[in-house]
Image (cartoon, rainbow, N blue to C red; front, side):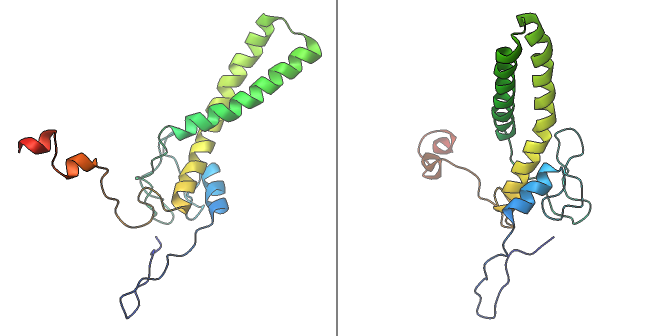
Amino acid sequence: METDAQTYSYGEEAAPPERSLAAAMLRGALCRCPACGAGGLYRAYLKPVDACRACGEELHHQRADDAPPYVTIFFAGHLIVAAVVGIDIAYAWPLWLHAMVWLPATVALCLGLLPVVKGALIGLQWALRMHGFGGAAEAADTHPALDAGIGGASAHR
């Protein structure tokens, strides 16, 4: 695992080393660790490993959440709709044939793209040091009213 900052004798910290965005996203898209590219990214279909077996980089704090399905649907939708329109113009298939071809093709394309897109987004998060990949612990998300003790449970303590 890499160290993100070096401390100099005066107590100033150097900027963390650059991480290649393209390399990290490519490694993630190949379902490999975004840090080293050697370890596997998933232990199940879409479940990332807690840490890379090769380099030890912690991956448990990734927060891809809903972005991979949105991006997958965006790409798959554009590819499938273009193919449907092109085939319909060229060959004028009946509707039942369109349904028999394009529904399974859409499902297969989405299921195939989803781990690739999620891996690329985890690589993006790692390269940009988002959501705990920067080495420093993140502060919990809070609402300003709760911080000031106004309303809610904190007012009744």
